[in-house]
Amino acid sequence: MIDTNAYVGAFAFRALRGTAAGDLLRRMDRYRIAQAWVSNPAAITYRNAQPANEELAQAVRGHADRLIPFAVINPGYAGWRDDLARCRTLGMRGLRLYPRWHNYKLTDAACVELAGAGLPVTIPMRVEDRRQQSWLVDVPDVDAREIGELGRAAPGARIVVLNASGGVARAGLPGNCLVEISLLRAELDNEIGQLIEAQGEERVVFGTGQPFHYVEPALLKMELLGLGPAARARIESGNARRLLGVTG
Amino acid sequence: MRRGFMAGASALAAPGEGGWIDAHSHLAYRREDADRRLMAAADKLGIAQLCCSTLPAERPMPLDGCRLSNEWTAAGMRRFAGRVLGYATANPGHGRAMLDEIERWLDAGFIGIKLYNDHLATDPVVAPVVELAIRRGVPILHHAGHTSWLPGPQPNISDAGHLAVLAKRYPEAMIICAHVCGGGDWEWTIKALRHSPTVFLDLSGSVPDEGVVEMAVETLGAARLLFACDLSMTASVGRLRGARIDAAARARIGAGNMRGILARRRG
Image 1 (cartoon, rainbow over the protein chains, first blue to last red):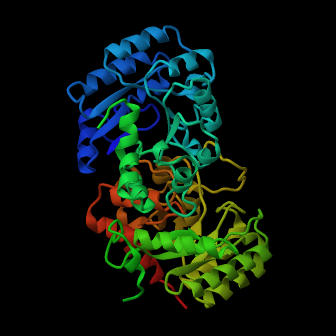
Image 2 (image 1 turned 180 degrees about the vertical axis):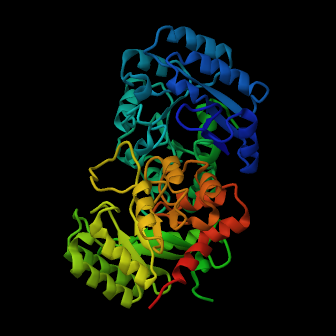
């Protein structure tokens, strides 16, 4: 399995349990997760996100086969192109964007340019449930329709919506947008099943949100979907591998 | 064997001998299809019994709405005999008529009382309902949240602090603080209940944050925690299965504590 939604590092508003690379690797072993796309949550609240990317590169050194670093780039901040170039040299293989936390629109010209830079783009719709946010902040979820607009404005981009909420199946996302499952239901109204029905299993990917989230709920969702082995393999790893440009 | 619910369960189920008891669930008024989906998901996830209320759509909850909702719950208890245990939905603001309604359903086999956000838990209007619950030996499942933001207005929503005050007034009452994982700042909620030993905490909700169960066990002890879903079933089953706690604690939380509550019923 490939976890497209994982983190190494501390978050400003809650003490996460197990934030070091070794902690994540042990958790991945426990659940037989082969690889994880990771970013550093510190970048969410740093004004200048680049030091968090540097920290991440250090943290995952020696684990390139399992921990795939994703850079947090704020395309509204001075020097973002320099940061992007630096992150490429650090071995970052994808991007993670926080437009509401970093105060820009996904359709801003700089963001469209960033999305077209050739790296997979992951966009968490939320970091935490809005009901539990600190009194210091009031950050709304990213609207899935805005992500769809970015997908249309940058047709060559490969985008994954992380921590997606239930309305994502009705957002009319274009074909270059995929959706990660960790916050969607596989029971009752079966939001994941609706999503597969609406846009096909090739546009759905496995993810957990660890260590923000427990891993088990995402595993249960995969079980509950009752997919055949081929469809399950695509969601659990094949689609993510394709996004990274890895074959086989 | 009580029921054949495990027959349709996959390998992901079987969380424990006899299955878990969901201390906080809901039936969907006049939507039998939704209720059937609920039971099918419970089958797959190894949930043996579900403690359900039905909520009317109107706020504050009208007396007639509570009556109709409770009738739907009673029908659900018949349709899913042995699987669905009923909470009587109540708005304490309706006074004597509401108390009569609660008594009627407790006489009919309901296992507890569900209070929503019509009144703060500390409002004196709630007291007669609490006294009735004490007399009958049944729990009150109380909606709660400590939030910085809500999708809609809930001016009378209680939080764990209100429930702690109520528990101090009525130490004999069995109060269940609802959905710690769907009620905002869960760390605040857990800490607010530390010194309220008679308040149980239901672990339900859609937020799958890692560490909730562990912190609740460390702060409150496993004996005060109840497995529950509030319709977020994979999140809630996964939360308890994934928590780094010992097997005995998991079994207590999964079913043992709720069985203990049910055993305290009088009359």
